[in-house]
Image (tube, rainbow, N blue to C red; front, side, top):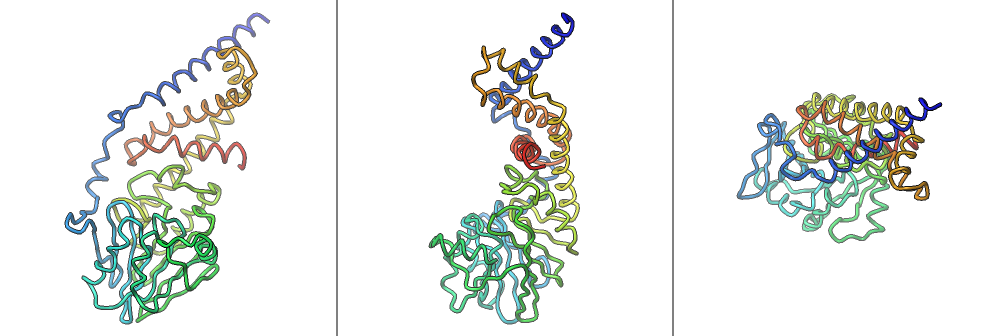
Length: 340
């Protein structure tokens, strides 16, 4: 019995020490302790024009990427007008001028990938175009009609599921793929002839996803979105953010990272004994009264162990691993603990 008690006491001490060290690491990481951006990511970064604050590139006949180095949108030039996909708040007002530099065709259609204002909060600049169709999913249209945000023009055309746009010899396929990011719905934009696919807020080539797997409201759906992307036949991929044009390899790498986070969190969660962590915390704080604190210590233990392990595997493979992995782990932990 004494031996069992001694082993338990040692276990409690080790857990308590781990909790203290994990909190210390989390609270003491200073700005100069984050790793520099990977050289290969820097090498692929698109060169933003300092005069305009934009980068514009024709990816395939009539299909253009436009970005400010943080957000990304696109436009398609046809023989009968221009279709724009998203108007980010940061540079939406510059898009009409950028289009005018490459074509005399008028903007006739604006497509919303989803409702978030960082991607469509510059759409008010398009009110200058007469007879403009603004196309979005039904859920997005209902949400924006309710919000009445002057910076996000309310859609004039909405649909559920799929819609094909045809204009001046160009075909653009719109398809809802789950609700992996936005509760109102998320849209893939595919131009078959250009082998161009835009799936906003799924991944950023060369980087881990943004905080909490791109602020996903449904990690179960988010895990599946990469197979949805890979089912398309594309050469050019736009994820809506950051410094590069994506490829199939970028999608596969982000999928591998996401699954590694999920599997690691699940394993460490299942291996970590809740009663042992709670007992160690109770001993450290002098009692069992603060139930929230005792349970938080368990979640913190799983998160800290998972983050340390994942960072060790990915720190030299993707940019931002030390910036956002803790948030990804927390998102996966909520899923593993309550939904998986």
